[in-house]
Image (tube, rainbow, N blue to C red):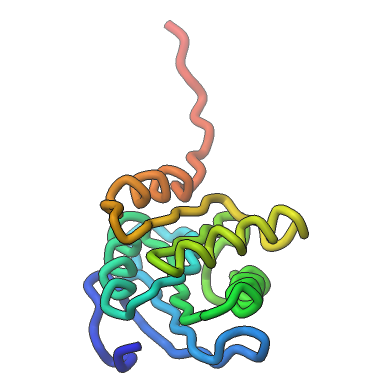
Length: 163
């Protein structure tokens, strides 16, 4: 991972976090820039096979969704599942909505995200809103379009006027 002081487009703050075993020891939280309308952000756990690609995906997710992004350098399903569970357990502390959690995986990270999503369904935890898998030959735009739709904040019901 690049040093935490490396600026990201659209990111307000970045911090390295130390997770307990069996989670990977390296993870980084990226918070979006504050918006004019106060809202709780969605939470995206990003598994990637390369730090440079992860940086580009983080920037894109923050730009599209305004989500808090936890980047994780896991190498095994047990680590990845522990990191996703930790993120769900600590969503509110991270400034994120525990009901709007998504996994994004790129390259070998896509295989991890897919398996963690299967475990989440089997175990009932963590609650996932969406899973975006980006394989090396894929254009990430389509996966990120689905992520954007899935993590859109709920709109308050507005009564309709009758004529």
